[in-house]
Image: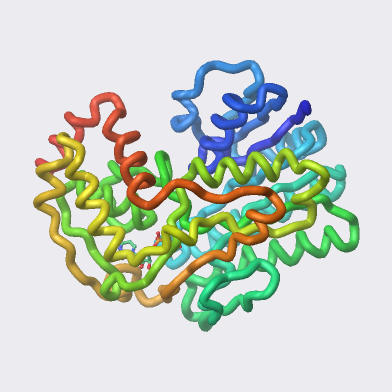
Length: 353
Ligand code: UDP
């Protein structure tokens, strides 16, 4: 099957992994990508099925519309998806995650294109359900003065808008909900500013810099960490959309088998980092300390205590199940960074800071 796939944010964590997998494993598919830079795409072998332009979707709007028209499937992955930024830049989240994306959604409606849109596990908020279900779980957020929820609210409204376009205009879409994807290229562990990455990269970064790992409010809150390769497998099946099995559907993409506490994640990261000689000394020296949510994120933050996906829909209708356990996910990610050129020298320099 020949397909032209447009990936907005092709250089992001999911975008770069998806682009790489398509080029490697789907010989009939072409990718048209746009992103602000291409640093995560540098390792991909040159391929004439990959057309990339460096640009900003909020500026290069004609390019975006033209390519929606030209492609078969549109995957808009440009968004701020990092809780540290929901509380510091809530309006940027609204402008980019909601306003810029609703425009792309409307292009898909106008040109009758299939849309594969990232919803989020965050959409369930503080849902009382112990296992979160796409069709039945309530979506529960805190008060307006807890600005963290602006991201979930933007995504919820987009889900509702897309759903409504499906009902009224027959828009062909799939909404997918990532549950704490981790893997190479999530955030940058060498980023010096603490608190700017999502939790796993932050902990790895703390090891590199030999800084104490901070557990927010004791670290008993739980997440279901999902290795990126498992997630990409699911996305490829959704793009293929054999017999329309993913059309007008919502799928949680997560690994309930990897539901662990943040404290457990810290301990595993320290243990597994010691398997790598270049990190051993740093990892042995790391302390784990407690910090309050207010101290770490400020007053606009509110946490989610547990987040476990029901993945029956993906299992049953897409034939998908995750297979990468927690320790393997951590080990593979660390291995990726350790193998980067000049890594050892940079760690030695960081530790000296
Ligand atoms: N967290 C932590 N220490 C850190 C960074 C994050 O304890 O240095 C906690 C955070 O409060 C949250 C969890 O780790 O409960 C996951 O945070 P992340 O930013 O990865 O995203 P979330 O799963 O909340 O969307």
